[in-house]
Image 1: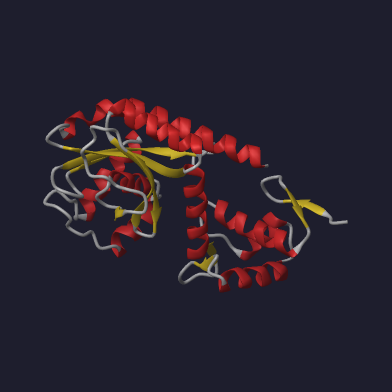
Image 2: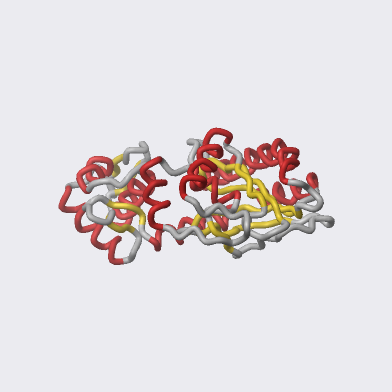
Length: 267
């Protein structure tokens, strides 16, 4: 008979190798900042030598990685890919996708859901109305973080230290004449997004196309993905994007609830 402990989320954890590995990954993934071996051991109720052994296995598989210049741990690229695939799968289930389709039909525009992968936004799902003629960010397509409305949501979700590091290490490519490439100006734009929980792009990805986005957050307020639209500026001027905000925010809340209820049913 297996024994049980509880992790720091109060969930039972079987005392088996796989359960220990999963518990360590969950603690690191849920941490709001890089986390030490000792903190992981405390959260998982495991001996520190055991955590060292488990972390070594996870690092070898790129599921966890070290913060540069530190012994603290972050999620690794393979775990990010796995998490993205899981979100993608969840968003493509019937209800979240149908909510996106309904939104597109309601506002008459191309709608998309995107998530951050490295320094790009990857579009996980999309829906088009009959009359939408904007820039279509189809499933699997990518766009830069600094000039897309969904990308700005993820920049706004960073704390000041993370944003400072990002701005000093990432090339802000000039996609159009309107693309913001000055770090100071981009920081100001990000601060507005933080304050308003609403992001826009004024012909910054492709000339002649404007866009906006709202966050999709889980029950704990963490950013899961961004819900955005892209429209031709000749039909909808940049100043007119606000007309879509209420419908987009309602759809984002409905998608978040659908994802939460689906997760609850699996437990």
